[in-house]
Image (cartoon, rainbow, N blue to C red; front, side, top):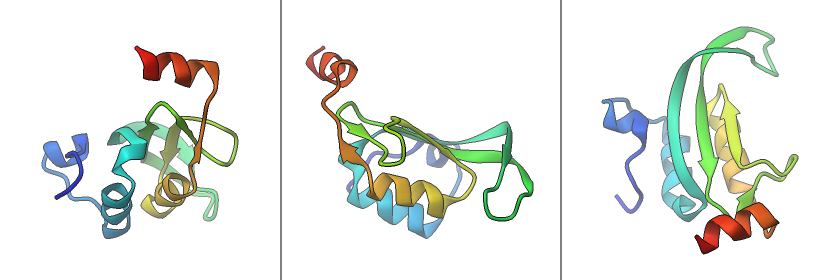
Length: 101
């Protein structure tokens, strides 16, 4: 495996194939990723409440292309994967400070 083990895998969880493939290909963009429970989220497409989500923190120097955030919290692996794949380089002051420390 050419990427770091996620917290989810370290606890014995299995990643969906799409998220596994995305993390392997774009591992340099990821600071950490985990599956989180106890959340109150509404799935955008179905409208159903879901209690857990994929929580991905992009590495300093990367941001999502849908608002410039470093943290991705999505109930579906496909949505999290899309945001990771479409992440853009970021050179904001916060990222530059974090990269230089």
